[in-house]
Length: 445
Image 1 (tube, rainbow, N blue to C red):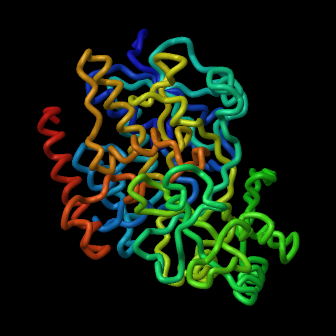
Image 2 (image 1 turned 120 degrees about the horizontal axis):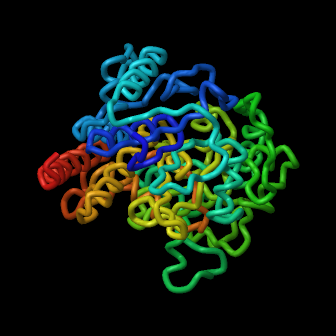
């Protein structure tokens, strides 16, 4: 294989999935992986596709968005899901794997594929040979990250990731909250932009005390914690003083509770995460609290007593590009034709989402190499939802990584809007799988 058709950098979930899918479609692939010569601080094994944080690929039920994504990947012939199913261990309603067996089997299948050549060694610059898929993950080595900056611009490559939680629309107690933008600013429809959760003095002080006392996730050895002043974790702001939040993201100025005609003592605002407003972001509340603590503390917020969290907040080292502004509809860099991004470096979160990113990128690139019309997965599918996330400019204007959620799929029409939550999710999954089958038939897969 002196002249491979495609170079893939990074042999994690996205890179291995992309390399395998391209090879299965007849393309010769050079897969570059810096192990065993060098490892990231999170890696302990020389195997490909090493799972570093957990052995769980999360919920398996189709009423769960990631469960739907896994089922779609199975039906489309995903390497990662095929091996995960073959190496799974008991985990209740989740799909969990034997990490060592999983990595060993992926390594065997990749290394033995006649159209894949694995080369060891650190890549310090984006190769001139095109096309190339960058699937280097959240801990992209410093030298390569600097070269990626050369292509995309320093302001469009993030090194630290601050994420606020997202809650579902249906789990908000709408009797306790109201919609209004501060001072009515923002143009036509501005009063629909934010949902306001009002606190009285006692509620606010109890909430701040809970933030201060909450258990936080400790930084790992390879993470040098440097918070940006513009997006501090909420508990860090709380620790700076009891009133800090009330002068920051919880300031009540310019807001009037229509039930009292008064300004609340403090307000936590929610902002729509998607056009259909099926999910809301807790504005300014990126956090490093442990997940059970987020449930406990954030359910103290008036109106969120029974909140369903579609995504928990986190703060951690992460290298990812500003996908909505940089990538086209095929995950190709707009300013450098032939350079593609897949997996966590493109801004998806999670094992399954990373594999899905590699799958979709490889499928679209294969279509281009064959001279076929580009046919992305339907937007109604979870695979299509991966592309929706990569292309969607968030209302805040700041792109952040995300797991797959139902907010990445268009809502149901007609009577489907009135279904109860679980029934609606199952209906979304049914629609997705039906549309995926039509897509598969069209592709001849």
